[in-house]
Image (cartoon, rainbow, N blue to C red):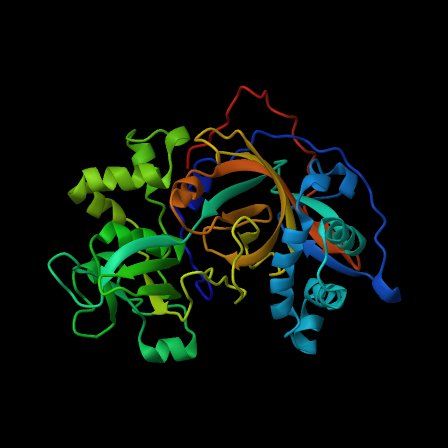
Length: 413
């Protein structure tokens, strides 16, 4: 969510224990890069990445996607990109190139599915990315939590959700109370500082809201309160799911946020100890978003369910279109839903690390959290790069051979 910086997903943490893909090699296709308007090509070098230039014909399902919907999400990013200064455009070649493409997108006006597909094809080259020694990216999901709460502390609502000190908010710092970890804060270290925004029923609700970076609080007085990430205490995130896996409580293949929540609720004291293994603590701010508004991404624009991605901001530029081809557990708990669609990098999270690592935003509502929380699949990660930019990787490793389909590779943390 906007400015949330270190959003920490339990589901994302599964990347630490489910990191070897069932490899699916993609045949190489070369595309000649053409400079826009005669401009000299710029080069973008991605560290620790295998890079493979494709053509759009190599993207299975490309013609079946709703590109008009993807173009709508892309235009939201363009609204932010077009605010960039000349200095910003010079500093990062892909940012400057995206700026130029966004100018053309804004001038094009509303486009239907076919027109939008042609726009992307005319302005971008598809480039498949993968980590060293692998052939696929890794995907998880996130969402906006929903909880009941109260503005005042009561016997029922007695767990605070904290904001950051006003001076921190104004200075847009990401770390506050760095000397305090989760245990100290939960034990009352912030009592008397008047930082409570509201109160909810369970510390588990706060924990999961912090993981997702935003929440909708239905106040007992009636109004809906929208909260977004504003800062953290700066402690590194520790994925709690791995402790349950190590102890044999939950199998790797069965791990999900629902399973972790169920275990915490069934084991209150052990659940408390488990949460405290993650010393990171997130603070929130109130927003003016309405009930029908989507939460904001780190790019500062509203996210689009099923079209917005959180990526590694140290590698990727917000506003970059990214094609995903994966089998995900959306319709059921089995990964049997084909997910082939164009999304846009509009958010980030500290658990999202690497060139082909992404988190899919699913929105909010009944059942959405369960879907997002069980996404932990590998698949094709294809970045659409403006044609004036050439992308290079610094890893020259042959792609591994595909594994047998009936083998699920799992690596311990």
